[in-house]
Structure formats: structure tokens, C-alpha cells
Image 1 (cartoon, one colour):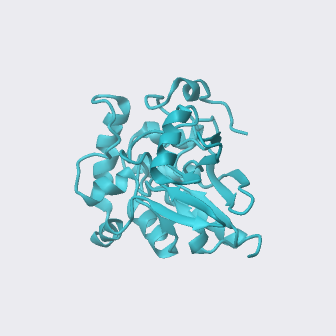
Image 2 (cartoon, one colour):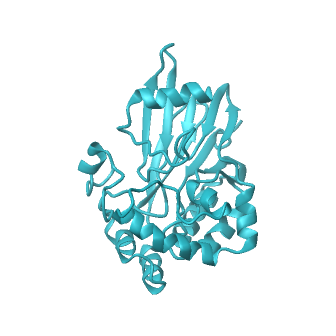
Length: 270
């Protein structure tokens, strides 16, 4: 096995942001990753203006992808994104704008493709067991952050039997190493999302590369045509607050964030 063959290229949360999705593909291609080494943690569709084009890019790329809560809701014909936002909250109000927009613009072929997306992936590499999920095990929309209690994460490790979990949904990248009750090291990896900034005051978006032999995980960011993505949102009458986030790197609100992550708003991630 070559040094490259031992690595996985990880990202999530395209959020209908075609410009960012084109950017991540260019990076993966330049680095020499093949589709079977690339994993997307779901929410291919979301806030931005080009859901159909983004789905088709991911589909034609042929990478490994799981369904996020957005794909689950779309393929079952629901009326919202399934994030369980508090009714009347800003996130709830905005989702009632972008979710119907996405529904109206997705082709039957894209919805059919979503039907076949698994909700999780399990595999073994170099004697380590991997589990890829979007949010939680029982609740695909569960928000799990770096500050989420270790016991909750260890419960999921026990449920899945995994040594390494690759997750998505929360929108902020992190790598949390912990030890279970038997003294075994566990890695919770969230590469972040590419469709929206990480609330750190920069327009950058995030992905990760994991060496499955050494367990060395490296987090990376990249810049893309975020101004174009923002302009397209405005042109299509999508929430201007989210369009502005693509420029400023600051989320409109911190409704979903725990205290620790809220306090880090606007601090550039190293």
C-alpha cells in the first residue's frame, strides 16, 4: 500500500454550494485521490442556490457519500429540513425559505439517487473499524460538537463498535481523541463542511485527510468563489443573512451552538 492509498479524503455539508463543491473536487483531483478514497458525510443539499447542479456533481464524481438529514427529508417528501429547530427561531424561519426552494429545483433523477444513499457506512481498514454517520445513531439530526460530553460520544462508539467515527452535521471541524472504559483509544473526526464557513470570521471552508495506518489526521481549509455563491443566493431570493455569512464567515445566530462553541464565534481556526 502506498502512502496515498492509506489515506481518506473527508468532507461534508455541500449545502447546494456548487462553487465550493467544484473547489473540493479540484483539490482532491490535484492531490491524486480516487473516488473510493473520498467520503462525504451528507447534507449535499442545503442553504445555497444550486441544489441540482451540486447533487449531479457529487453523483457523477462517484465518491462514497451518506445521506444527511436534508437528503432524508427530501427523499421522503417532508416539508422541512428535519433539524428540529425551535419553532419560530431564526433557523426555523430561514429553513422554510431554502428547503422549498431546493425541493422545487431537484430533478426526479436526483431524488432517485438520494433514495439509494445509505444513512451510514461501516468498513475496516488496517485492522481499525470505521463508522461514518451524519449526526447521531438514533437521531440523524443530533448535533455533536467538540464540547459534547465524552460520555455521549463513547455511547455511540459502543453502539457502533467503531474505533474511528467520521461525522458531519454540526458545521464546525474538530478531532476529539478519547479513551473508552477498556483503555482503547477512540477518534471522533468531523471534517467540517464546505458549503458554509465555520463561524470563525473567515470565508474559508474545511475538509480533512486521515492516514488510516498512522491515525494521523490533518485538517485543511480552502478558499473558493464565495462571492459568486453569495450573489447567486441573493439573486434567487434565498435568505440574505446566509448569503452574507458566505462573505463574513460569521453565522447569523448561534441557536444550535453550545456555550463553548458560541464563545469561539469570530475566532479564526488555526
